[in-house]
Image (cartoon, rainbow, N blue to C red; front, side):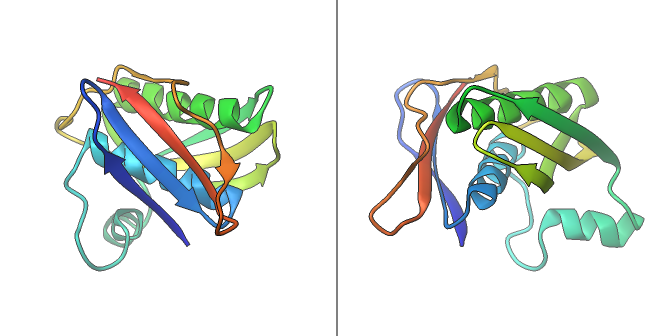
Length: 149
């Protein structure tokens, strides 16, 4: 189980993310950020990454990410910042990650994206403000991420 939802914020974009696994939390945060950047994913059917694979027989862009950070929250923010940089450099939206290794302070993954004509929202930065990965009363991982727009 993984999910995300937008929360109200006065000036920026605020995202609540929850998952029963730490890897799922990272994947849901990536999906949420991608849908802020380009909010036109299919409403039903397979995930966009699967449609990309089916149409082209492979994703258009694959980027490898290897990161270390002092704690898990910093690792998530650094991961999203890295993907955001790739999005801006490649003019692409990355909606899927194949997480190969994830510890509290290290991440190895590939992210898959597709070039787009333009973005719906220009995220300037992924911030640490309010970000704190913790377990909730259901035993799931959760955090809030604020994107500077």
